Image (cartoon, rainbow, N blue to C red; front, top):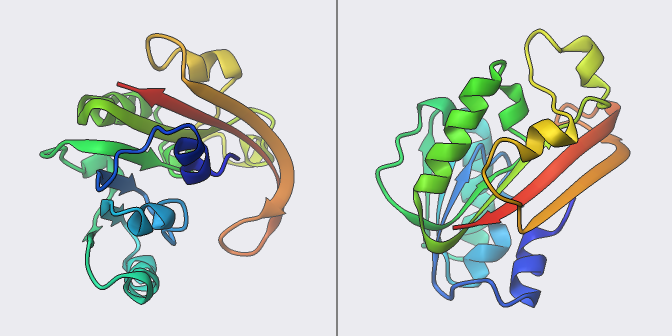
Length: 181
């Protein structure tokens, strides 16, 4: 998977002091570098425990500039607009692909002009595609590209062995997609 902040920064695609939404933020590691760049960050997750961890980690970097919201991403209401939205490693846990498409399109519509949307999807060769196909969603490359109109600014397809949040080792197949509005 790409290091999103590094890629955007090296290509001069970051807005100084922008606003960022991290849906399904987990431990917040993907959005953490944006805090040091002056972004105001809203972090959303359904797990209150990880939000406490995020607040502890973020407060050690900067005392303000971020807000945590306890809630499910599929129920998040896009009332504000953002310079960037991250939805990393959380969409595949939605069973219905139509719901994933709705979330992605809603997120894209909540971007300022020039803003970026970064999201990940699990591929059909992921270990979980065999065991969890009835409760999660998995994509071919063409299916991933068909969610949005137009070509992404960046797409990667990554394979590898790694650990889950619970520490289990598995084979990953992940698509990372980056779009600009």
